Length: 231
Image 1 (spheres, helix red, strand yellow):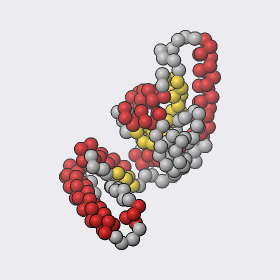
Image 2 (image 1 turned 30 degrees about the vertical axis):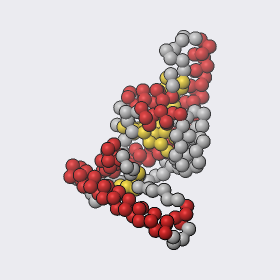
Image 3 (image 1 turned 45 degrees about the horizontal axis):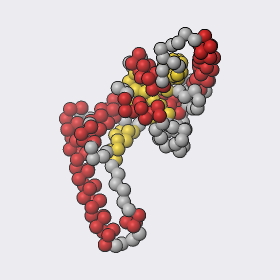
Image 4 (image 1 turned 120 degrees about the vertical axis):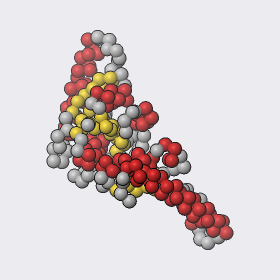
């Protein structure tokens, strides 16, 4: 199986390739670093356009190869530049062609370093792709270590969309620890010291926390029966 790492020719960052290589080190799969070159589709056989595309394609291929060559340890990551009508469409075409297990993309340049922010390409792919889409935090650094822990963010609808099962299956496949977290937002006044309002808020949060933990435990127990996952 293959992991497609999407490369942005305009930003030329290595974050998605770094994450893809780390995932591949965990799973034993191979990585293909790919850039998608947008063009009119179907091709118009315009000599001027073809000449321009050849120039841009050569520059993109050179930039992509330079990023891959700069990876520590020089991992075996083949590169390619694919032409398509749009970047999301091109990435989906590559995922289908190579039977990719996942597509790894970078965060939007508008996001903060170390954070995940969706852009136009990632926004479309996370809602339309038939394979898992991983998004590298902006500036994600290369690591020689495999992925050792997965975190699943649990919400009220998670039991209906199969989050716990999917996370448990991935954790087992990757031989990684699974952590399940749930969040609640509390008003600022709840942290201002003892008060009647804060006491009531604490009681509500405690009840929510217990109910959520019970729900997660029930789902994990059902998953353990089917998958034989560890505690």
